[in-house]
Amino acid sequence: MHHGTEATGARTREEVLEHVTCAVCGGKDYDVVLEAQYENEKDVDLIHKFRASGDELLIDRLVKCRNCGLRYINPRLRGDLIFSSYAEGEDPVYVSQMDARERTFAASLAQIEKLVDRPGRLLDIGTAAGGFLAAATRRGWQAEGCEPNRWLAAWGSKHYGVRIQPGSVFEQNYEPASFDVVTLWDVIEHTTNPRETIAHCRSLLKPGGVLVVNYPDIGSWIARALGRRWLFLTSVHLHYFDRGTMKRFLESAGFEVLAMRPHFQRLELDYILSRGAVLSKQLVALARGIAKPLGLSRSQVPYWLGQTFVAARRKA
Ligand SMILES: [Zn+2]
Image (cartoon, rainbow, N blue to C red; front, side, top):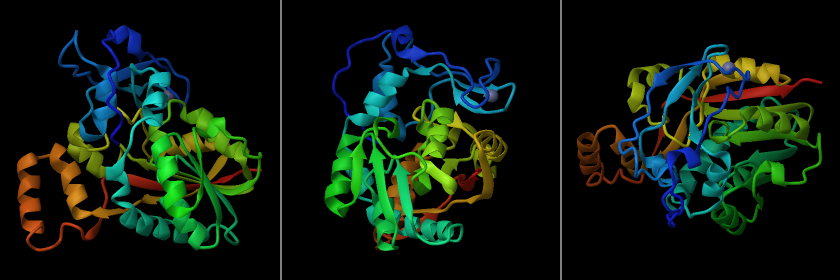
């Protein structure tokens, strides 16, 4: 995501970072998986780094909980600074890919519809520009969402005519136990407190309602193969689940896991290649040089880098 770039002033690392415990089990003990790579001890502006990190590899320290195995960034940028960073800024690059995202969402809805009797009330948390809400509305769902980024929330409301409330889910007044489905697309890894977020999702779901989560799986073969170069390893992703930690996490939060499978997302080829520049600038320049004269730059392609789809039912 491309966030605002207004001056934040020089702050010391102690002022902007916080040490946290494991968000899944509360454990305090951890092993260091990757050491921090802050290249300049004194002058680094970590807030700016955080905002730009959608295009950069992880520079923060990654640790692994000794109790439950969750991997997470620790220390990390303070929660209030993370949230204000999401609220601000514009993201025209994200909305340039809405056609491809809507096709991904239509396929996801077909999966979700196998788990419910009929389309009902649906809440999409962190809906970004509302592409999922638009796809769901077309398929007969009563869909609404919320989005911390004010620019994206306004863009989606206007472009699709769907209901998107600005702000986090905690700032809304949704009626408890009123939704048949609650979705979190590419959201849980960004949250400062996943346990609190999932507990809130549970309170909004009707008994027997379905929670859908998509997350980048650090235990996937591709994440293990790419190591530090895995594209989802970035400062904005605070928590790194694998299938085991995700299953235990949801079960301990009062859910029964129904399905877990690789989740293919579609984007335009040129957009994927532009993001892939992190891996190899030369290789990507070569691929773009080939795709452009062939007219493939804007063709939509499914890609998979460990994204995992999970559906879970709220236990009574
Ligand atoms: Zn833990």
